[in-house]
Length: 299
Image (cartoon, rainbow, N blue to C red; front, top):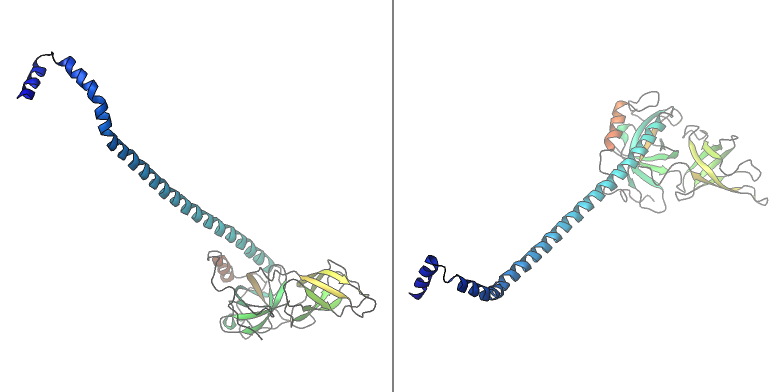
């Protein structure tokens, strides 16, 4: 009843106004202290929530950065692949014979052989002994053919030899593989022969296998010993044997044709189907499983 009476008096007259002000001033610290746990809880909750949001945003940004880096890496790879394919297409216009574009799909894991597997085979007209080029020079020849694939013996294999000549003066010799991709050995070069460092060697066409005039290598070193009948000459292959992914299969009169001759242009340029196949390869994912290790041991 007393509380009701005070409420009525306070509502009707202003006599208790100063008393209410004094009481409010006294009770303010109590209100503040009573509200501390709630405010502490709200502040702690906001801090925890903000930290969780920041961590989540950090993870999201990190994932986006990784995806962007992956796209940039693929873009760089595709750009380089595009350059290599354009070089290959340009080189095909310099070849007088018919050509067929092939892609490397496997490397022989045997360390004692230098062989690769390509995605063209007997159904494409590939035949044994067919010369193989890349955009910069002679790579090797086909030594095994299946309906859908073919195996290429590189010129650096220790069992491979081909007749060459010095482009500067026509000096003839035999270039033999040394078992690695770095250099070839030039055999049967007389100790007094006119051969120099940086001389360019091309195929001579005398072996009735490789057409004449294809770049083979550049002379790295010439060691002449009067006590020896032949000079020791090392040659760096012009072809990018350990980097080229696309190559040209040559159909020449010297090497002969297989049972099936692809319908290619007579002037050596790729037909529309071949150009479309090369351009389509640019759209493929650069990373392909099984690039290394597709080939079997060749003993």
